[in-house]
Every structure is written in C-alpha cells, then in structure tokens.
Image 1 (spheres, one colour):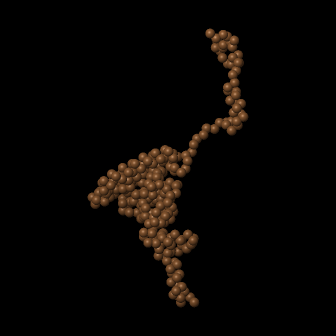
Image 2 (cartoon, rainbow, N blue to C red; image 1 turned 120 degrees about the horizontal axis):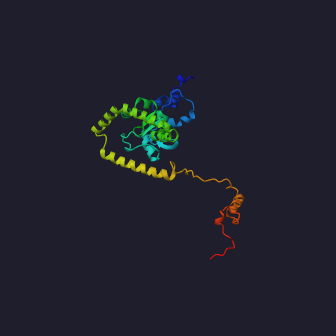
Image 3 (cartoon, helix red, strand yellow; image 1 turned 90 degrees about the vertical axis):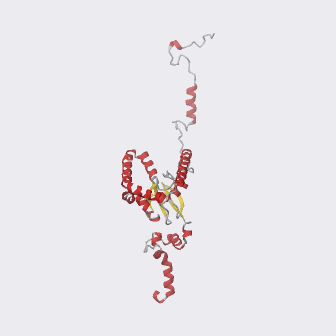
Length: 277
C-alpha cells in the first residue's frame, strides 16, 4: 500500500513535517534541514505555541562573553540593563543617544527585522558589519545569541590596542555623519507625532544615570561579575616558603655585632666600658 492510497498515513506524515514546512519564516529553519532532529523540539514547541506562550520562552544570550537568560520579546537593551552589562543607554532606551549599539556575532536571524528607525540611525556599512541598536531591537525567536556592545569594544581596544582608537572614532563619526540628515528627520517626526513623551524621556534619563552610578559602584566593589571574586595581588619573596631559611635570615638581621666589627667611623664608636653620666 502506497502513501497516496492511505490518506491517514499521508496526513500523519504531513502533521509531523508541518513544523519544518510551515514555520521556517518564523523559526529561521531551512525547509529541507532535517538534521539534528533531537534538537528540533524547541522549534516545534515554538511553532505550535500561542503568542503569549512564545513570549515566555527562555533563551540564552551572550553579551560581552557573559551568558544570560532572556525571554522572547524582550528588547536587547532591557536584557543588558537588568543583568548590569556594560552597555550605553544615556537616553534611557528611547533611541536618542545612539550609545547602545551592539555587534551581532551570532544569531542575527533571531532578532526582529531592521525597522525604519534603525535604518535612519545605521549606515549601510554598520548594517553589513552586523550592528544593531539595542533599544530598537527585540528577541524575535528562540536560540543562542552572541553580542558585543560598542562601549565594551572601545574599552577592550583602549586596554589592548590603544593605537587603533583614533581610527575607530573617526570611522564611527563618519558613519554617524552620513546618516545625520536621516536621523534628524526621524527624530523630528517622532516629536511632531507625539511619539516621544518629554516627561518620560527625562525620567528615563535620570533612571539611566542612576543605573550607571550603581553599576560603577558595583564594578569598583566586585568587578563586572559580583559572583566572581576579584583577583588579589600577593607579594612573593624568594624564601617565603622556607621557614627555616626565614628564621636564619631573621636571626642574622637582629644579631648585634660588636662595635669593632661594625662599619662605623672611628669618631662615632663608643667604648663599651665607658661610663654613662
């Protein structure tokens, strides 16, 4: 009996194949990619889950070489802020300061598509390099994501390759200048359409400043990750591990030498039997 002669078997196979045939645009999976079937459970669950259930799906996100958990639907800026990650957000996540740029090293297909607002901020060069605006980008699909924030990239460059910082700043300044007309037009339209609440903006900026201060204090106390104890410096001595040698050295330092053996000028030497008035 062939599959065409048995509607029940055909329907059953069609149901099994549905996640791979009907959901590739939503999950980023290739229609013909049936490898690693045991890893497809999460994809199948996502395809058949409701929109509210999709928002609660936990995924892994790696920011600046540190792993965190995030929920589908969250903005990148919110994930970074709640985990106290090194990222810029002076405007409080309102898409004004342009300091929350991130470079996506892995998982670009898991993010929301580029919006018109992002296209108004990012040059074609930055887009090709995988740059996204964290406050305008959301986690769209489950998976593993790897990001590097621009401010962290600059920090590492200053620490390891300070000679490159001038060229980097010149490049970023030029890319911003190219998009300056589009950026101004987009922001003006937002104000004109009332999509940017001034009071909310001020509140967000104040909150962002407070978060930055708290992060600075936390970093000074614990480093970037409070769970990891900071490295302490301990001075090492040549014979620190040899207690017997230490005792000999200590005795030689405290032993009193006779005056005649001390390397003192004759005028400063005192007779041991001289009376003391």
